[in-house]
Image 1 (cartoon, helix red, strand yellow):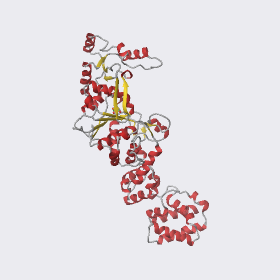
Image 2: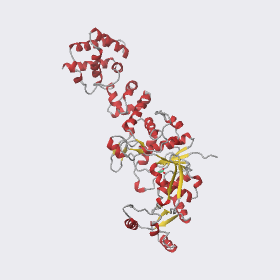
Image 3: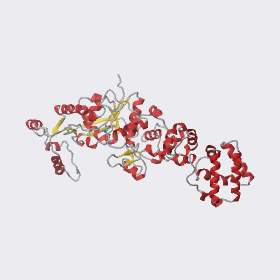
Image 4: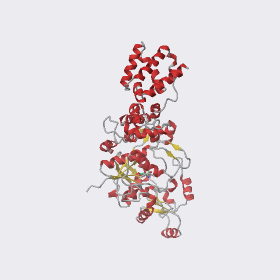
Length: 510
Ligand code: GLU
């Protein structure tokens, strides 16, 4: 019987969710849904020192916004609850103790001062921060170097200790990564990681293995930065006797800075002026807010689409995919090994495409909120839908609707008469006065009729339409932007259009 696919996203709630983290969620989600499997979110909060208020809620809000809902999580519940590691604290110690009993781990009693001393004593220019490893462990105070009686005494006196994994000497460990193929490590490269801390909390290394086992995870996808930890995890799977149930691994390539080398960081976003977090994140301590893609005006459909394309393609030139299409097309085999450079201009291109693709009615609630934030209260929903239909092709970000759409709901705040005046003369003045009269009598108020009347009147006055359309646009909009000017007039309605023309004429003549 083949096992049901179960994947997990296992964030530590320490702050805003980086777009690389959301991409990890996405790849987990796509794989699970394609295979008819389960997508689990497990909160890895064993490092209490790094706990950040609000970070967990933020993660779930982000997943909701992206439409990537987990099947099981601390919020959604599920058969393997609890899904927060801090609530599973008691379950880890027994495995650490079992490893000690079986000779695969040991108690280490070294105090922080002794560890510091060790680092100073063994540091060399080539190795500035020596690790607690196969060589060093022989020189430290642990159950490998101390006699049994001494260890028993220390334990009975409640001496603080940690449990460390005992990396075997001179072994090569291999595994097949779904993206990288065969990966190997020599045990001399890996230190004896702490598994259980002095406060009884497991470290990430122990907890991730125990929980992946207990939660029956079949595939573990995570960022490439976790690759160096893989040998520790592989050994734990083996030493705990669970090797046959070990998940398949895929270490996802990094998302790289647009300029230079290395992983894209929040600082790069601040430096280059683009978001790196999915949604706005306010640091509870400093109260500093970091802008997110959502608040910058991205549609979740576009955000998901652009993340999928950071390191994956379907083998063709196609770039636009819905989430359902991604579920259908996604394959881990097509994820690139190399990191993907983040390009904000390209990210905006995706958003523009998605705004163009989205029906006006679908954009409506979002645009209404954006306009509201821009100081415009929309009361006429029908008008809003028309406006969206008219201007959406010009909006790259949702926030662009404020600039592109405001003038439909309120008179332009300023009118660029300086752009009209140099070419203004009596003939034009007369033309617009006549236009007001003609349009006032007009029984039809459709774009095509307005254009026809406008052009006929221009011809009668022996004026070029081209010289008259810009002034008209500025009168209605305030500046040199916006969709077709007769479309604008049609949406504004007769009364408002005429009022705006009259107003500008008065300003010019004043
Ligand atoms: N808790 C780790 C993190 O914060 C999870 C790594 C993994 O998926 O194994 O990213």
